[in-house]
Image (cartoon, rainbow, N blue to C red; front, top):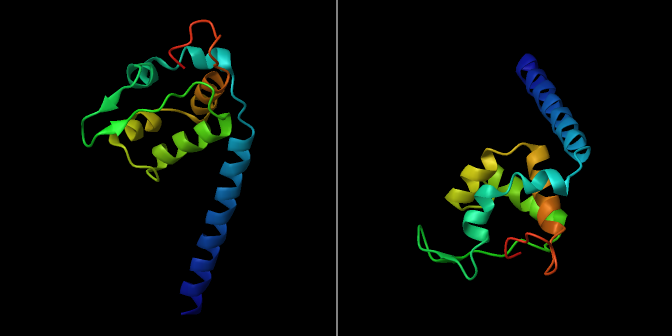
Amino acid sequence: MKKIVGKHVVIAALSVLAGYAASAQAADVVGNAKAGQDKVAMCIGCHGIPEYRTAYPEVFRVPKLGGQNQTYLENALHAYKKGDRHFDTMHAIAASLSDQDIADVAAYYAAQNAASKNNPDK
């Protein structure tokens, strides 16, 4: 019994340390809006259409991303990637993105405003 409990404690401790390491690594990622411009093609397919609403799997109004807070966008994409936020299309897209891709896309959209050149309808 002592070996089993000890083994689980070690596994739990290693899991916690791995989580801290991943958080520290993610904290080092800095978004680049210029790099993000080349990574938003899939986003524009829905988010670049004025007043777009999805019809499957349910009716959902697609939000505009331009001008949104960068941290909010990063957190939302990470949540879709992990499955904490539920929309199949967003999960599939976010799952294909690296932490750097997410930071770049978020930086790109956070930098947008009404006067931005090539603004994909915000």
